[in-house]
Amino acid sequence: AGSAVAIAEGEKDVETLERIGLVATTNSGGAGSWPPEFAPEFKGVGLAVILNDNDDAGRKRGDKIAISLERAGVPHLIINLPGLPEKGDVSDWFAAGHTFDEFETIVAERANAADLKAQTETAGPTAAKEGEGQVPYHLTELGNAERFAARHAGQVRVPRGRGLLAYDERR
Image (cartoon, rainbow, N blue to C red; front, side, top):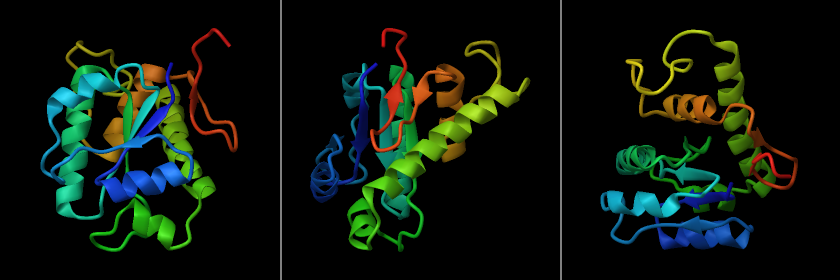
C-alpha cells in the first residue's frame, strides 16, 4: 500500500505540510471547487488525510472530498484539528506551536480508535459487509473512521516517528 497523503485547503497549507515532511496536495479554486474526478487519482494511496479549515465551507469541502474518495474506493479520514479558531487552518495550527508529533498522534489515534471499535463491535453498520443492506456510514469523522476500520482492520500500523504505514503482507 502507498503512503499517507494530506489533502489541504490551499497552497499555503500544502507548503506548511511539505515543510514538516508530509506529502500534501490541494485543488485550485477554493473550498467549493473539489472536482470528484480527482478522487481516482488517489488510488494506491495508503490513506488520504482530509484537513478541513474550521468553517462551514471547509467542513462541506471535507465531506465532498470524502464522498468522492469513498466512491473511488480510496481509504480516507477527515481530521478536524483541535483548538483551531473559527476559519483557522492547518497552517494556523502549526503556527500556534503545534508539532509534527502532535499531528501524527492525532491521525494515529483516530485510525487506531476506529480499528479498535471495528474489532470490538459485532453488529451494526461497522460490522456489516458493504452491499448487505447495512445503514450507510455517516459522512462525519466517526463515519470515516468506522469505514476505514471495517475495510482495513489489522492492516494499519503507526510506528512512533515514522508516520502511518499499512501492512501489505510483503514486509
